[in-house]
Length: 354
Image (cartoon, rainbow, N blue to C red):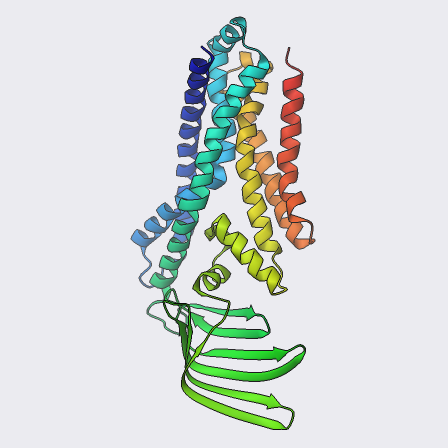
């Protein structure tokens, strides 16, 4: 019997959450599309803006799922309470702890689905959408196509003049150091990374600063091996939102090994983890409200409470994450604090149910 009731509650919560998520995505997608209309130029026209917006919807869904889960759980569980179904469950012998376990299972299902969405679907599509927009806007203007970048590989600093999606860089400047002393400066007229992650430098001219003088070397074609491969370079150019959790961890490790600041990427990683874990809490918080004054209220009241709490959580988490980067606070603390506070409030509310 408990299994049947658990499946019934899960279907109710998931269906309500899916409905709320569709509404939120429709609004977010509309605003995203309107914002893109201001950036139309070159081959990036209305059709491409629509495609760009559609490709970004999975990432938007990943960001909105905690709020959608809370509002959907409030609506779904509120409907069960309004029809006296939760009262019947209690009368049949189910305790608050057992009902909380059923709600938590629903949150666990949402957590798994959200994790898959945020790891394998959202970031790749977001990265493709941003590259597609850049190529469509600037492919007729070679001088603006691509991104300038600085990367570090141990004691070598590389300045890439223009990085395209095919990892062709144009001119490339290399600065080699021995501790704090500049050892050599080199410039290649054209450069790129091949399929084996080898750096191909064409028309290379290198100036070496030796103890007994200066030596100039030239080469029509040179192959260099750097730790920075195409994946790491792509991560350095992509926005954190366009990276999966695995890519974030790899890039964070690269930054730390090269004594570079990884705060922005650490914050994004832990923010993602904490926000995903919050999905288990949202149905429990909704259950606590259902047992309270909302059980006699209408759907409008439940919706308003869900929107207020969801916005408060969203604003608090975003503000703390951004403040943590500005004031150099611990990324784990600032990203987990809103979720921990929400969990404590939920436990307190459930403990007061008789």
